[in-house]
Image (tube, rainbow, N blue to C red; front, side, top):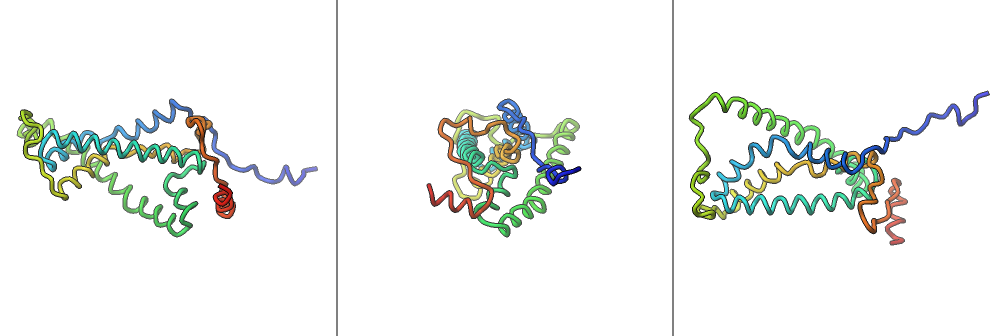
Length: 207
């Protein structure tokens, strides 16, 4: 005779099989994409000098590293897959989470795919054209900071190009529930928040 326990469906859970090597491989595989093959020339063109472009790259890398450390901490506190969506859902509610998901799926992801397609087409056709000169300043490196543009617009575009190349540092947080013991990477991790928002507020009050 079947009991109530036998008839109730088992809760769907993701297998926690992603280790340190798998997590690093996932982030590296997403970050090393088409952006790094296209962004350097635009950074050099907009900022105007090789020295300033290197500083922009270093500053963007530092910003991406700090943001990834923040996401690593979020991954140990809110141990749910979903990345930005689940963090906004747990902190700001359903409406803001829906806006985040809608923007990602309707605007950000399609435009990113368009950029990847254009980069692939340009790099695929470049060998067939001989009249492709290097960017201004690429062949004269005597003065690294000669011609640097310090106005807001070129610096902003240069930062955008660099940050787009670094995009992908947050990929691991989309599969948080599949990571095998994510809290072990920290010496003194923060306690995980419960999934119920009312319990989350009670846990914050205790701390």
